[in-house]
Length: 387
Image 1: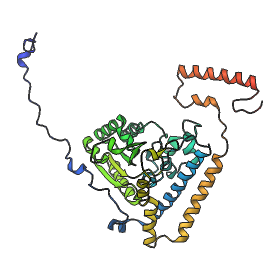
Image 2: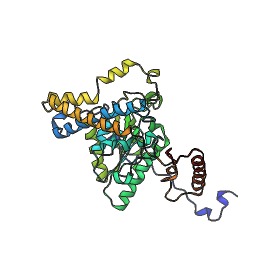
Image 3: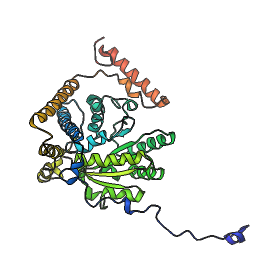
Image 4: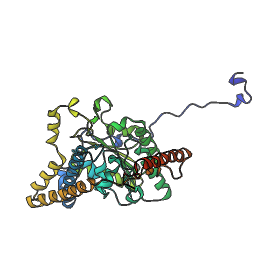
């Protein structure tokens, strides 16, 4: 039976589809051809001196935090640490642009952003130490759990932002991801949902040049990662990721836009990963020392310090005070991380589901039998202490 022979076919009169036209004018969504900068430009005259000084203090503290955490891996106190040295401007700006009620969705490299938002440095490193699923209460700190899977936090950020909007809560979610994460499906799904729902979320891509050993040119042929925003119907912004003032300004504008109902923004911060991917990586196998040294001249700490000293806003005494405060933080972190944690192996099954599944209960029961047998054999409890 053909379509024409079906009952009622005579009344079937297909109409041609409407002429194609874009849902959104793409021109306002396109990023600038060059990364936006503040330091060293006329725009710096409008920057708040107090904000610049606060950014500087956080950058110095962040640099020392990265160095101390890296040292802890060499001492066996951390299983792994993905350093954000060279990217501190992105990390600090992301934390400072948010209100207390907002949410930060970090990636595994963004422990510094969590610390800059107020999280205890030890709690920020708990996952990387291998102690627990996460070392803090996400609801209390408004920081989603740090996680190692790439880009999975992005759809979560969109879901939270969309739910907040439906409930009438004045909340913005800021989701951080690396350039490698933009090659994951979660990145594209998150952007599409966010744009269609006009969710109050800001996506910050830290383009540090490499996805482990894979350079950006082998991930994408796009003019920039910021250009990917246009395909989803949101603005793309391109910013110098080592210019703390510029990153703070661009992210602040994106947060204001999201909070006022303007929808999401994709911000690409062009920066550089000075250290290896993690302490387990040998970066010399895929990049040369000359490339790293060239980026050291664009160090975010030095850029801001040069601006502040040049304008007479920062003197030698103030610099020493900032560095001393960073050293005190590092000393406290070192002392606390050198203490062996007291852990209960049964916590492995806690906080996975609100209600434990049958499979988890069975696994927990088997582990308990093994621990009890070991205790009977060696005369020790779960933590190795004598009975």
